[in-house]
Amino acid sequence: MDLIKLKVKTVVLSSQGLCSLLLTDEGEKKVLPITIGFFEAQAIAFPLEGKTPPRPLTHDLLKTICQKLNGELEKVVITDIKDDTYYSEIYLRRNGDIMQIDARPSDAIALALRYDAPIYMAPRLVEFTYDYSDIFKDYVDGDID
Image 1 (tube, rainbow, N blue to C red):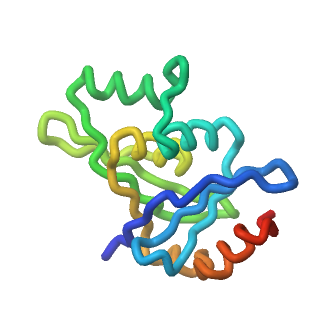
Image 2 (image 1 turned 135 degrees about the vertical axis):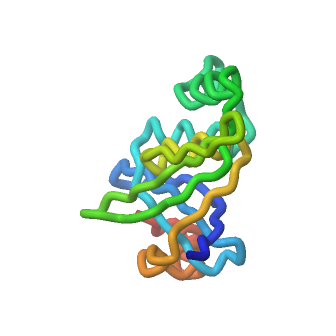
């Protein structure tokens, strides 16, 4: 299975108070939107904007613990969607072994940004993507909800 590499484009707040994480493929042709909570959006926004929170957030703490235990995040894979909920896995390397760990996509991506680790999605999720130009035309026009 050839995974599709993604990058975090932005996090947006809709007029209804929901946050959307917008992931794009490398060619910026497709967008995978994932609805996330406000605190998860904040945890993603800090590293995305190159900022450091005044105190470590949970994901910063987890990274520090992993590093102290000689663990490194190899990659994140968004694997599935069931009942409108996305699933993902983080791949953690420690002492030459790879551990595959179930995680919410928002948590996995918040960690990936802190590690500068690659983010992928399973090819079967392409059907849940949107054309980049359609999404970002609305975003630029202020019509994103």
